[in-house]
Image 1 (cartoon, helix red, strand yellow):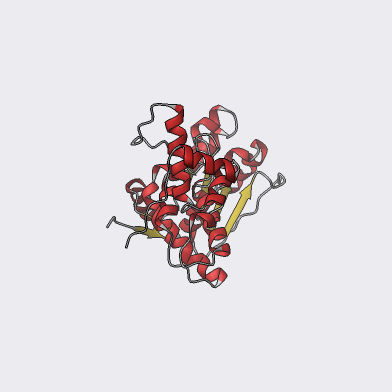
Image 2 (cartoon, one colour; image 1 turned 90 degrees about the vertical axis):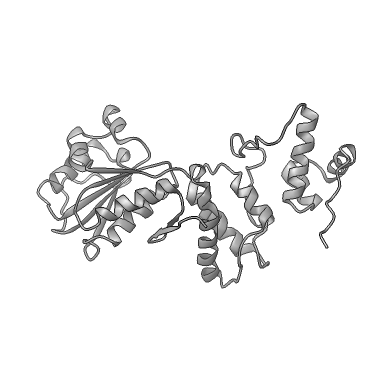
Length: 288
């Protein structure tokens, strides 16, 4: 069994994420400023809040500032606490000057900033003041996208099922192997946020003991570009054989429910029946 590490609501068995969390734990009792980067949906805000909640400043305010807020001419900060700069590159340069002035002499205020871009590139693109960059960039953490830590998916699924069982008063005890295999081959453009939302919907609508593929509303996954990972183990030598392989995979995912398979394939049920006959496809016999 893979090593699993939890930090607040963050759960991982990915080596890079474990190393990241171990580094985070080393700075919890200091007021060192932190920059967290990563794609949308990777959990930057969750990590920022978890750092605050486990730090020596946890009993003091967490003040969030984002680019959607009106620009203030001054900023009154408490003597102690955490200043959370959400999506650093979206905060105006004028407001950044106010922030810099406010934190200049605050020794017991930690700054945690998040960004979807590399922080140095923000300076080059004139989206971040250079003086603020040098003030807050004391240690940086980059959260890997979910497609680079797919070993976490089974842990995250179980974590979210347990969470949403409580919310919806359900007793779902896991996910079917077909659905899990499908999710493991999905490329997750929305990262952990997308997985969490799908699990919430799945638990809410499911009336079974396990989540099945039909409970997971991945509407764009079949026809979308760059979303399903290519299976390099499948040898495809012609368009016809590729079509046969794709139809067979969808039938398997839908447990040979032809209506649902046709819907995912975006063809009519009669046309699917003709394709099954053309390719001589048959439903696997049930194991005794």
